[in-house]
Length: 391
Ligand SMILES: Cc1cc2nc3c(=O)[nH]c(=O)nc-3n(C[C@H](O)[C@H](O)[C@H](O)COP(=O)(O)O)c2cc1C
Ligand SMILES: C=C(O[C@@H]1CC(C(=O)O)=C[C@@H](OP(=O)(O)O)[C@H]1O)C(=O)O
Image (cartoon, rainbow, N blue to C red):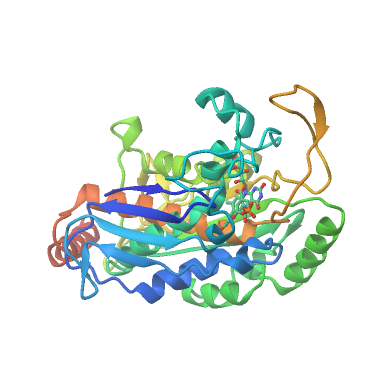
């Protein structure tokens, strides 16, 4: 399965094309729109989210809620385009009137300056429109389809917030959740998508304070995947290592700067005897582990334990507090000014990280099993799970 997205932040619409989904997968559009809603939410988001409704349309590859095996197209209108029609028109020629909102002042932390140099744009709007995280809306739509595919195979994926700014949610509280369903309910109801109400209250205060100071906040998201059979991905070649592919997918989210599996950077603080997940055997369930320090991966392959990914998002680069930069035409120094921006988007980014994870795991499943028809694929996965138990 592969996908591509197209669309500018203030252009007419965003589009995703997914190729390689098996036929007869049931697609629930309400579920997609629910995930779109989750990405739109989150304390600290800016005014743009009040303009958009983010309800998608499926325009190809699905009939009566079932995939056909042909490419699937998902479309999303940008409501904000109404305010940018002339500036962002794909067909009108450039005139003095419709190029008035040219951007010549690159914002530090954005693609603006280097994108302009690379593509020979002097109106940096030509860069920022596509480098904007608006595009992550389509990744969430594709991810929602991937999640529905995985769910049909007993694999569940959830992303949530672990830390926002310097405030960390309490790990002991996370361990109290019986399953992902219970965790989903609590984190979905949280305005900052976390599971710790005490941390949530403190985080909201910090977001208010950052906003007041014209500053922004980053944070750490976590994604957990349960029900994964052992053996997805492979150790045989670097490009087949599934942990490596997941790391690429996560770092490819706007503003993500680091990714780790299991205990992650904490692994360095312990000797090997405390970090490995020892192997046990039971007649009924086969080989199993009692711990998951390595986050579900050995040798680039899933080992049957939950996949646990944490990833860090830098603070939003557009600040109301001005940052120093230089105009690309006049070469004069200036201090950046801002129209509108998010104070933080870590809660939204947790949904994006969940989507990128789901897409990557779905691709690994489709690389390994029959990718044509859902029934045959389900039968193969069930037989494979049985084979593993009897190994
Ligand atoms: C969900 C989400 C929302 C974002 N919202 C904003 C925003 O409102 N303002 C902003 O300057 N950056 C925002 N960003 C981050 C920028 O898109 C990103 O930092 C920029 O494109 C440069 O890419 P890089 O940080 O990956 O190098 C957002 C990122 C995500 C994932
Ligand atoms: C539009 C979205 O996020 C945008 C991501 C973004 C950026 O620079 O990445 C900048 C802001 O856009 P605007 O300049 O239109 O206010 C955010 O609102 C979205 O997530 O749907």
